[in-house]
Structure formats: C-alpha cells, structure tokens
Amino acid sequence: MSPGNDAPFPFFLPSYTAAAWYHKRLSPDLQQLPLKEVLNQSEAFASGDYLLALSRGDTVSPTDLDRLANQLAKFTGLDAAYLKQQNLREPDVRFFDDLLKDKNRSIGRLDARFTGIRLKPGTNDAKEFDPSGEAVFGSFASAFNDYVRRDLKFESDLPYETIAEVKPWTFSENKFLDVANNLKLAMSRHPYLKVWICCGYYDLATPYFAAESVIHGLNLDPAIRENVQFTFYEAGHMLYIEKGSREKFKSDFEQFLSKALSGAPVNNAER
Image 1: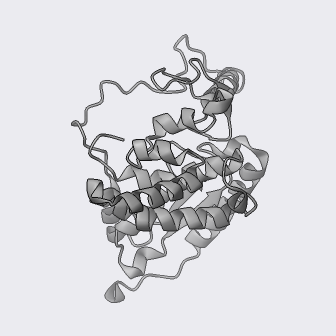
Image 2: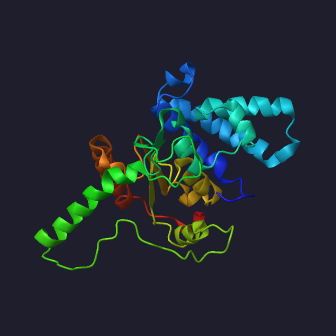
Image 3: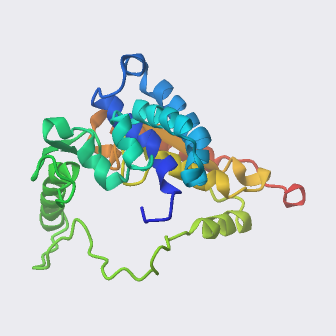
C-alpha cells in the first residue's frame, strides 16, 4: 500500500473481517453469523460506500465520516475514532499489529489465524515477525532437505531458501506488477485454457477479494468466462497446512481436472 494509492484498501477489507471474525473481535450480531455471511456484508460495504468514500477524499461530510468510520470499525474490530484519525485507511502492516494490540499480540500475514508475541507492544514502528511464517517455515525446510537427500539422493551445501530475496525491486516507484492482461491474452488466444484460482479467507498476503476483482476486471469474452474457476477455503495463504483444507483441495483439484479434460469443443465462429 503506497501513499496516494487507495485501490488496495477495499480489497483487503473482507480479509480483515475474516481475521477479526476468527479472533472474535466483531460485534455480537456479526460474530454469531457463519463466516461467509459476514464476508458478504463486508464485501458489499467494501465495493460500495467504502470505495466511494475513499474516492471523495476530504469532501466527505463529518456526518458521513462518522457513519463510515463506525461501519469500518464494525467490519474490522478496530476503534472507530482511531479509523477516523487514519482517514478510513488501515494499511495491512498496521492491521497485523492493531487487531490484537490490547493482548500484545500480532496476527499472521500469510495466515491471520496465527498469533505471535509483540516485540514492542503498543507501538507501530517496530518491524515485527510474521507468526504464521515462523510456525511453518522450519518444518517446510526440514521436510524438503530430508526429502531431496534421503529420497532423491541429492546433496548440496547450498542453503534452501524458504523465502527468496528479490531486492532490489526493479519496478518503478508507485507502480505495481500487473500481468492480468497477459492472462487475458493467453485465454483469448487459447480458448481451451482453464484457470483455477484457490483463495484462503485468512490470507492477508494475497486477499481473495482482490483476486476476484482482477478477474472480473478482465472483462473476458462470454465464451471463455467460465474457463476461470474460484475455490475458497477457510485457510490462509498455504491452505495445505491444515488437514481439512488439504483434503478439500485434493478433491477440488480432481474435479477441476476432470472438468477441464472433458470440455466440449469450442466453436470459434460463435466467440
């Protein structure tokens, strides 16, 4: 999230809501509802009143600002007065620490269900660790190193990088990487190409609502629009770390593969 770029805030909001629901920080009327019903309400606010308010900047009236701050607080579990001070903009890097600030805990970026002890409780200037990464990376690295040596008989002194270093970032300032048009081009040129997008509701690294928005924004031709399939999981970025989601993923993959291989021929004349 960069200054002057308000696009991410509505996309992140439903994922903030999922995290707040999981940690029981929402109001009782929302907390008692199933997650999907709560997310439906959050999505409607994010793509409606909230999106419009961000575009209006300081022309939002004091009355509307109060109302919007209360709505935003309702869907984030944060304080309305604080959100007004933030001009209705809560960056992800602050939300990780703000949601459970009163408990001196941070939540995971890769998976908001995980919590970690704050290094500097009550502050927002400390570089905190991602508790969801700390919870799994050690196991991943150990399992991989054991597999390549024991099963594949591959040996090397090179370290196994769980997170690749990509600095220095080569993109211009305030410019985000956009490959959506490349996908549209590939799908338009190859109408048998099927795309399966798996999203975790608790993923605060790649929010599910943003993925949906990108695909809808492609305005694909109706003949290939059904070639994109979304599947959602009550999981984080790495949905496979949980047995239930992993088993569902396997079943969903088999169904996707079967459907992709049995599709009817495309009549190019009708496209």
